[in-house]
Structures are given as structure tokens and as C-alpha cells.
Length: 272
Image 1 (spheres, rainbow, N blue to C red):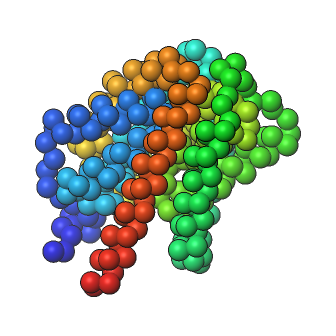
Image 2 (tube, one colour):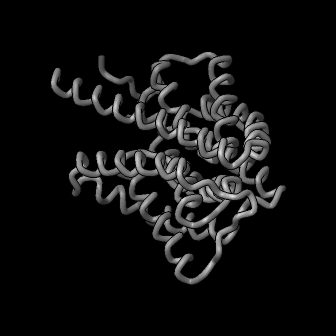
């Protein structure tokens, strides 16, 4: 069945999703965003697709909904001093550049190799989270080399986002913990800060391409903002060990989702 389009050629959202379903989705995404320092797209996009929303509209609406959620989440962590502002801005600078490189490289690199390399990297991250348990008072020791490394991490994350459609939080939070010595709460708060300029840029781009359903983005975003502070409070109440355990389980779920989506895509290609 062909995808419905607007007269201007932009894809339609598909079946009208009930407000109740969008509110529940937003509450879940907001809580996870505050709890883990991720954008929430790891749950919003797959659920919207299951509800029949066009993939481009789902992705664009999710990014727009993530913007106010990231602002609220980062503010919640900042109120307790759990945001490294310099690190967040350095990461943001890298991810904005990297996202553009990722889009440019999309048609030039073998995606199969990149995909499985990324999967392997996430597996290593899961293992590392069980081996490296931060202390709650740990902070990032900023030096010129560390600053350069943070920009590089942001750039690599942006490239992966452009190539594979993966949000930055699932990568940056564990990297800050394992390789930069950040506490779990600082890693999460800093990552949410990093997402704000990236989400603004992506929202502008999606708006130009009419890839946003304003109703979906508004309902999911407002519900997520309401639930995000509860996620932040839960994160601060968890011990660093159990925070690592919970985050590793989230990454495992994302890994499973990526592999299943990849397998389904290959299956559909063969049928086609």
C-alpha cells in the first residue's frame, strides 16, 4: 500500500493516533529520558511505527518532542549540580558537525560494516558498565586533551546518528562514565544538555521537509516534560551500581530492537 502524502509531497502521519495513547507514550518516554539521560526516541519512534505513523513523520515528531524534554531533564539535573556545562557544549559542537558528516557519508560507506561495528561497540559498552562503577562524586577532569576528546566523541556520535538514526544519549552516557570518569548523574545531565542544540537543528530541518506532525509532537512532548522530573529524581535515588545495571538493560533492549528491525528490513527487501 503506497504511503499517503500531503499535496506538497510530504508524507502524511497515517492513522490518527488517539490522544490517550500519545500521552501514555510521552509519559513513558519522559520518565526514561530523565532516568537514563537519553532523548526518549528509543521508545517513541518504534511505538509510533507500530501505531501506523509514517517513519519520517515518526522520527521528525520524536525529535521535536525530545527538545522540551531534554530542556526539562537537563534543568532537573542542573538544579542538583549534575551538569558539566563545558563538556556538554563541547559534545554539542561535535555532534552538530558529526551529524552533517553522517548524512554526507550515508551514500558513501558500507552500512553493513558500520551497523555491525556499532552493535559490537554497544556490546562492549554493556560489559564495561558492569566492570566500571562510578562514584557519585566523580567529575570530568577537564584538560585540553579531554576537551578535544569530547568534541571527537560528539562528532563520532553525530556521524552514527546520521548513518544509523541512533540518538546520542545511548552512546554518550556510558562513554562519559567509562572513559571520562564522570559520575552516572553528571553523565546523564550533561548528555541531556548536549541534546538541546542538536534537537533544535534537527527540528528546523524536519520542519522544512514537513516531517513533523505538530499534534503528535505537542502531546508526546508535553507528557514527557511532565514525567521527566520523576525520572531525574529516580536516577538520583539509585546507587551508581544499580544505575549502571539499569542502563545496561536499556542498551540491551535497544540492541535487540536494532537487530530485529534490521532483520525485518532485509526480509522485506527479499520479498520485494
